[in-house]
Amino acid sequence: MPLIGDTIRLSCVFHKFDGTVSDVNDIVLKIYDQREQQYGVSITGTDIVREDVGSYYYDYTIPSDVTILGKNSVMYYEFSGTLEGKSAIARKSFKRKWVE
Picture 1: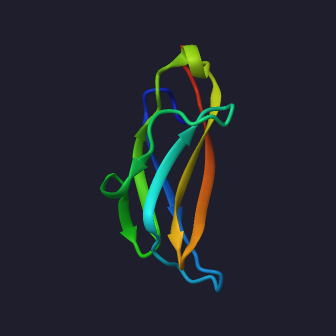
Picture 2 (picture 1 turned 30 degrees about the horizontal axis):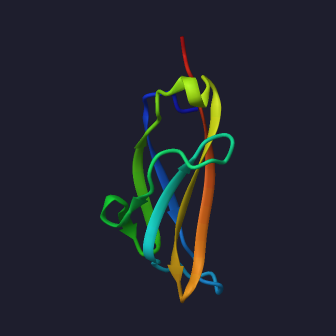
Picture 3 (picture 1 turned 90 degrees about the horizontal axis):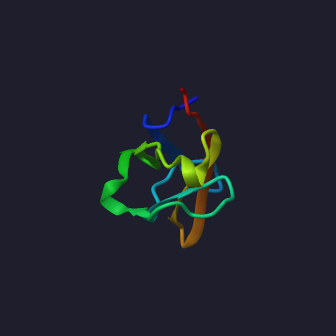
């Protein structure tokens, strides 16, 4: 479980309908809080690393804002883009923990 202040790697892989891995256009990363409200600004383009065909990551430092987010809360992240002219979205979650 990631601790508040740690840097973690958020990653995703996009697939076509036939299952082959494929790159997306106009990739964007959004972070959401436990209420599924967007937290912070969207991360776009060159800030997101393309590791391989269809595989992307972003190194994210877990926010220390315990007033809004609470000490132990789930956060969500969403990579999105356009694949073959259609929207493509990949979502996952992580639980951040405060250790005293």
